Picture 1 (cartoon, rainbow, N blue to C red):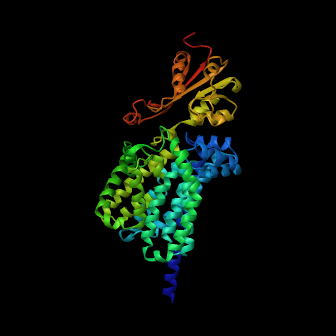
Picture 2: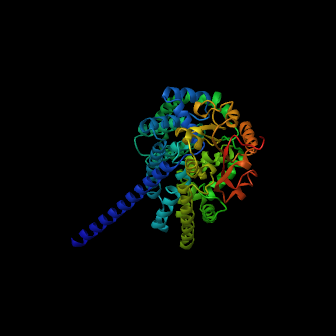
Picture 3: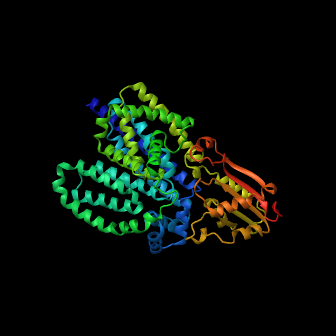
Length: 517
């Protein structure tokens, strides 16, 4: 009796320690994602969302403008509008978005990965590794704390994963929930049709034994979902397809393959030629060998079928832009965790674990501090630039700031600065460019802060080119300050030779003194 009681007590203690560990990890994730979301200044694409929401602050207006000009469906804008209405603070909107993602990614990790891994080769190392590559993926931390469509795709993919893991629930409820996720994910982004199609085929295969019993809910809910999505299908073919531009998702097959390989080898939190990137590349090359050796076992898993099918189609369809891969990062975490768990040599597993820990910590540091990630706008030293302008402003009313960067212009405009935004979206009043901007600058009586940042080759923005040409006449009299040294500019120049060694150059000038006068 005493032995039985002791055994029961030991089991209780083990369960309590496990609960404490998972609770600690959960709270850590919530804090981490919330902090990164709240502390971020945002990046270029986010300020399209901000301008859109602030310019059209009702749900009816959002639907109208979105369905007439935007390349993305209205789902993410409606979420952002709702959150902005209840917070009035974009930092809080990012924080809430990040926390929601932390919750869903943790649930996916605990219920779909930890509970399903083959732990015959080491439960502790498998758990640590899966947490790193799923919950602490620097790319998820970066993209999942923003206010763009991909941020809100993460929870949807996690829910699909949870449904796959709990497929024995009532058939009507199961398929209703699946189709609700499908409808919503399509309202977030049309390219998620790939996720929908692949997951649907995997679900049918997973449930093939009971498919005859479930044909009625599959067909009825499917028809209802198609009816709900019909308008967005129409808008997609009549509006959205025609609005793709230079830097949109149509990046081509070669770019899709390059970005896909980059995601798998080192992710987006580190540069591939950095020490952290090299650690991750070595770790993932070893994992790739393990995948090849165990390919039949690994691809037999429905999650891996879902992930690999979606990933490959993104790569070869021309839709493999970096942001399009983001939604399936939770599935990538599952896939890599399964590959790791199937490694039999303890020494090799420990080497992969150590390399992954080092690379992931480096990536997390980069994301948290906004340095050396693969996304230039995430690395922009916005706080330093804005603080410098604050410290060197004698009178806000007589100060003019000129830039093509919507982030800096947004914050300074809200502080009362006079601003000129050279690359705004003209359908939004707050981003419209005054056609007399050059006259305003040349006749300005006061200080001018003229900013230059990277312009991708091929963008060919006429106003920005004219701005740079005009700025040349003021540079000798200007106080020049460089912000943000890009230590990997030499590598990035292989893709774009025009890249500067600094992220931003600021010229403090008085418009009354140019070389031409």
